[in-house]
Image (cartoon, rainbow, N blue to C red; front, side, top):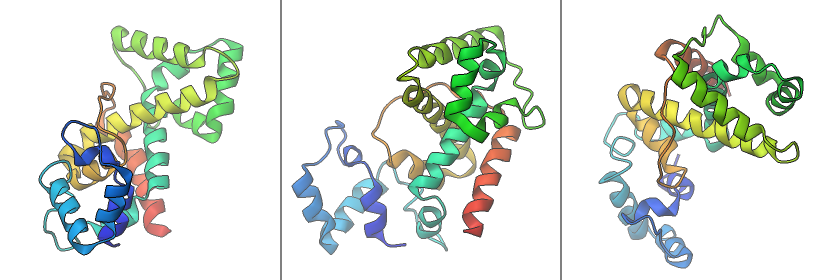
Amino acid sequence: MSLDALLAEVDPRWYEADGAGLDDALLQRARSSRLGCRLLAGALADGPAAHLLAPSPEGFSAVIARWNRARLLALHRDLGVLAYAPAIRAEIRRDAVKRVKSVLGTSYLLALDRSVWDAKVDPQLQGRLAAALAEALAGADTCGPRLLDAFERQGRAELQVWARQREPALADWAQLMHPPGELPLAHLPEKPLLVVHTHHQNRAVAA
């Protein structure tokens, strides 16, 4: 996988410390030249992509080939669904359950699977997740996008905390596809997170 492919996926706001991003025309000019690509990559290597662009036998190509945007989106959402399992299992309102099932499809079963995670959390976290789920569910016509966004953001947080310790190059890559910003607090134990991560990684390898 080429450096051009990597740079094309990076949110432009990572190129500036103040988060303003680069002018689109200037960014396109930089991406279209070898020197420009090297300068952009250098800016990332000195900051948010220090692990991804560090010298290694495989280089960055293996990471970005395995974890394209679609696969990372699926991983983030499943991690988010699992992280919300305590609230999803506790939700008993018929209409709310119907909405969650409709949005998640088969991923709803992941939240219910006690063989993956028992979803036992302290009351404070349970309350926070329940409140966030209720907020996302408010309004039948618009709850779908809000639910998916809540799950994805939570999943991004879960992956970042775990991957920073275990797969820092993946953490860099997943981070670069979104603008800089704060994420929710992560809380998934490592074992259930690994179940989901391994499942998606195996699918990526087999593809």
